[in-house]
Every structure is written in C-alpha cells, then in structure tokens.
Length: 231
Image (cartoon, rainbow, N blue to C red; front, side, top):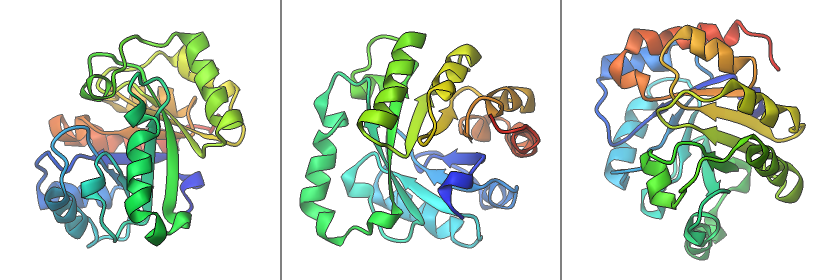
C-alpha cells in the first residue's frame, strides 16, 4: 500500500511488552500500517523480535529510525525523522549524515521517507533527547509546515504531541498550508472521539501509548478515523 493513502497507523514500541494475541489484534484491526519506533531503549534485538512477529500478518510495516544500530532489512518503509525544532544539530542532519556514510550505498530510496518532525510536548522523552525546549505556537507550526513542504520538499510533516492531546486549531492551521506534504498527527489519543477530531484535520493519525494501557480503546480508533471525511 502506498503510504500516501494511509489514514490510520499504530505505532508499536520495541522497548515495550506486547503479547502475540494483542499484536495480532492490532495487525488484523484494519489499520493501514504498523510503525515500529520509540525514543528510548530501542536496539537491534528488540526491533528484530518485533519485526518477526509482525511479519506473520499482511499489514504494511515501517521502521521509524531512532538509532542507526537498529536498522535492519525486512521493513516495507524506513521513516527518517528530522526534528525541525530541535536545538541539537545531530537530530536535524548529523545522525543522518553518519548513517549515509555507512549505509548510503546499499539503501533502496523507494523505501525511505523523511519525516519533518515538530515536537509539541517539551516534557516528553523525544523532546529531552533532541533538545526541544519550548512549545511552538501556531505561527511557529505554520512556518515549520511551510519549511517542510516548500524548502525541504519533505513527504511528511509530523506534529508530535507525544502523550498529550494536541490543539485542534494548531493542527488545522498546519493542514491549511500543506498541499503535497502529508500531515501526520500523533499524541495523546485515548479514545475514538479524540481520533475522529484529529482525523478531520490530519491526513494520517498515529495511535501509540493507548495500545499499552487500553487496547480496546486503541482498536476503536481505526474505525473512528476511517469514518471521518478527509480534510
């Protein structure tokens, strides 16, 4: 499936525990994809373990690369985050440069997608890791969205609230200025109604943490997202 048609995806963290039965429910839920990724504790061993278990199913699977050491063949897509509001250059282009020096000659570029991340929760692990210190306001977010589409020509602009439900007005403002770049929303979705709210504003809704706290609520977000008219 073309990533451009995704409306809903589950993000599963290799560093967190999930049973085979629960993983099957996610894979067979009707979601458009499973994204394997996390900010802390991700290594090659737990990525390979999760990949092998997901590959029993036909659902597309992407690796969101957070460490070079965890990259392995076998995924349908490789998402490469560049954190547009990071204060640490290694998270904008430094780690990417190191990876390309080592692996650039063997990469299949049809499988690689760059995500222009805008981290919206300064208290989350990803923010602390990448040096995000302030919450971008709506004008900042619009500028980052335009940067992603018009300056860098990125396929994805990812508004990441990471554990906190975002401001719909901000998500809407970002969507208004994006035509070719796909708007991903992630963060704080705990039920179907919240999923519907963001599905009306973003191209793709990513559901993560609630998988580990309330699986039935997580599963309910699939139908909720797909019932909403695209922005």
